[in-house]
Length: 428
Image 1: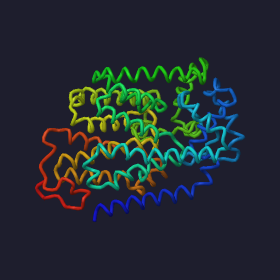
Image 2: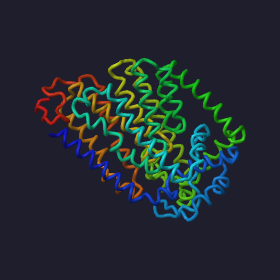
Image 3: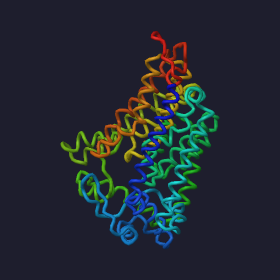
Image 4: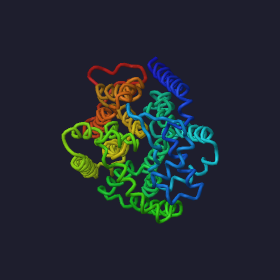
């Protein structure tokens, strides 16, 4: 009975997301979303001007005629400039191909590809989450397409969904003992390097040299592609472009101009910006964020070094890796939380497979329900309070950590009670 309720609830969430998409279709196809930056980058490359890609005026020149009349809003402040492209160059060839289509068609192709990836991820997961699949196959099958951050990624035309797939494939490679392949797959996700590099640092602290070798080889190849796309000039300008984008952001005007709102980030940067920006200058807030992030990375990297070598602990350790990477990422948006679909599934699966205590299974189930409850996100989006999502992300990490502790798994009469529809025994 409860399994059927889970299925209907997920269908209702998907229906709500479809309704949102239809209601916002006009603005989406007019260029109000992040995909406009990707498309414009492709057009710049098609014009043979890729060497000037990381130049504000170049991006503005291309976007102004493409999206004339588009007036974006950044939490109550008009956004006067273009939607800036600040991903690494090696991703541009993909958008160059899409730039030969009209903008609505290019967005449609990208959105359909994103939805296809969301359907592929559960197929990859199925063989590795037997407990959760037996308890609720509907949850596994629909976990990605019903996840609100994933819907936002589709709506925005973002590439967070592709990054989620690469993390899933890297995790599968690790389970199969193919660490070099896992490193190569993570390197392919360097278009969002602020999520990938923290995980790589964790593997460095664990001295997983094969993984680092695979990552290094793939990274060199991507660097070569980047040189081919933007040349030496573009490569040299890119770091300065990023630094400029992230400076002076205590000014709401500059936040709107650059489309970067630190207070709306679901990570440590968002929390510390909200807590400290009214009292400390940016010259102190940014270092405080970097120190806190480095401390968390160092602590978890050293604490997890021995655990990572244990096959049974791999799922939970990698889940914690993703949670930590999201928390310490210097730039995160709601759609980037698509990455959390994997740790949510893995933590819930382990709670079922290991016959964890009843309170832990119910707690993990309620936390998963909170992550999938779309209405909970809406007031945060409206007010720009996404930094509060650090709380459930931290709780997810704690749930994974609790199951890593000795004695976390206890015998239970019904190991799949949480989603199969049976109440766990009182002494479980």
